Image (cartoon, rainbow, N blue to C red):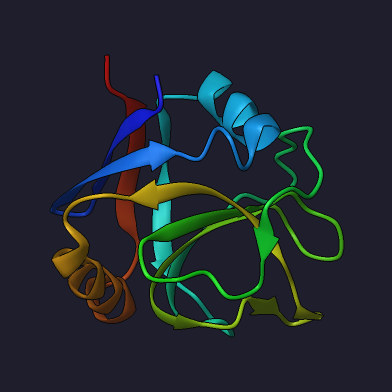
Length: 138
């Protein structure tokens, strides 16, 4: 099933896995669901929240990767010159780290609740880390 519910802070979003565009990333992430973490505001990338995942290895390389995700797109950086991370764009993003520009695999797209993305980003910026949960819908 490619449908997801993403609960981030007080907000709930419907989403879909991009199984045709990023099949390996989607398969690896599906094995980890329900995936629970915390989202914090990005440091260098612009208008996004991110889930810093340290050395977590999903066992995937690059596929359907971008440095410029659109609002509502979720990307996975599989690690390398920076730590593994998931980024959720809510506005203009140029994905980067202290090491410079990065590219991540676009593997999830939000399909509802988009009007709340900016509020999520603002909440994370001013109030700190927000609990986040990705789960599949039957």
